[in-house]
Length: 141
Image 1 (tube, one colour):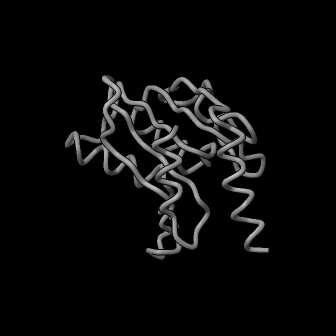
Image 2 (tube, one colour):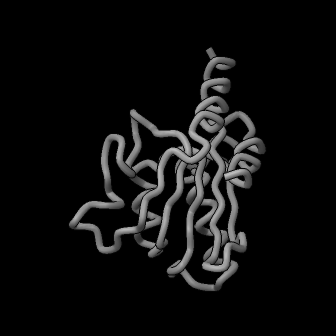
Image 3 (cartoon, helix red, strand yellow):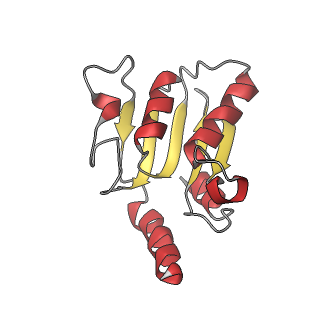
């Protein structure tokens, strides 16, 4: 989670979310932070950026054996992407009570209808992750 928090700190003028993808041996093979505002890209979520980098690193879209670590619970789009990529595990910090799709609002990752069901580990360094987000929104108000 420390690596994902480091990625979140690189976010410019966007919600500070960071993500990393680790291979089965624990090596980081992809990383990303929110770039929606910087790139004008609605799909520029940290998870998507990290998954794309991991796929490029392995030269495949199948990320079996990999773990996605992210500071905020993935949304529907990101949960769908990690399921489609066959990620084995998702680890997240802060829960997202408005748009979370790994247990809060929806639970796509564990839905019986999903083609792939990754393990979900939630609340890792939750306070630190939540604090980074709340400080961002406090400054914006």
